[in-house]
Length: 404
Image (cartoon, rainbow, N blue to C red):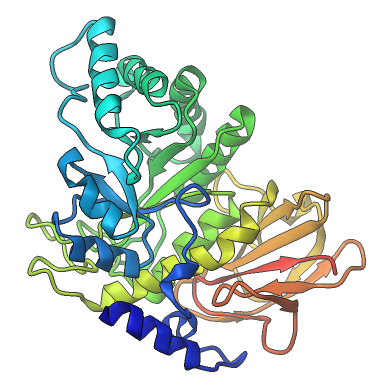
């Protein structure tokens, strides 16, 4: 296959700390982690062709989005998994009695749950608050019928900002407490075409992280991968900003809206256009996904213990005075810093440049003397933090282990 030959050729590419594009250091796509470790998925129903699924995998997705049961074999041939999307899950249609819901989910599970391509089931997107009790019934029925699969529900974001954060947390809790899902998900499209970030972006991450910690439930973030309405044109900075701020808050899965084109409104700049061709966004999205794969084996083993911002603090967030591990973060910033502990209680920090237009230098001063190791988002390798590592591109981040 041309794809495997091209990826194998990359093994011959050498690189230095001066950094080449992620695609130049991705030795082969076999390095991708599975969705059980860190799910990465397009918010799409892809064309039912093995080549389409292979192309999505090459872009760094380990889930093929939402797939009709009849196409599961094609997904498996592309060495991927997916969310099964089936018309028997009809939450917004006629209200069904509990026994009918259970009957439908048992029949669907018997047909699909043991298929190697089935990671989970797409239950519903953005249910209104009054619909949550019904969603819980369907989710619980799926969990009973297919306990080893994910019943996937994507929840509304809170665009009201910090003032309505408490109300939004109640909305999240109303689902998570009753459904007890394997993970919960929400979408938050907040990068605007005037260069600003929606004020609620970080307060949403704050609230989701809080609910995640309170319920011991991982959370996923569905982020922006196209232009529509008044949202920003995709760039290296917008992708970096979204993956690194999400990771700083302890996110354990990423979805992208959208990977393929939409023939409506002003939707544009998707990775795959309406004619089925790759666009420049494809390379940007692939490089973002590859960084997630490289960091996932390490960051998923870390426990989120704090997040702070410096020097300016967005609404609903905390400042450096709450830091557990750092006395200072020097540099122009602005910075978002996630703080973590590993299984031995050793500290780690993820420093993110929140500026979407400018690079910045930074220096951290730890509260206790320790070695500093840098985890490369290009290779996944760990080495001492050294010369020029203290530069961050717009929106970019760096994971630092504060121990030998």
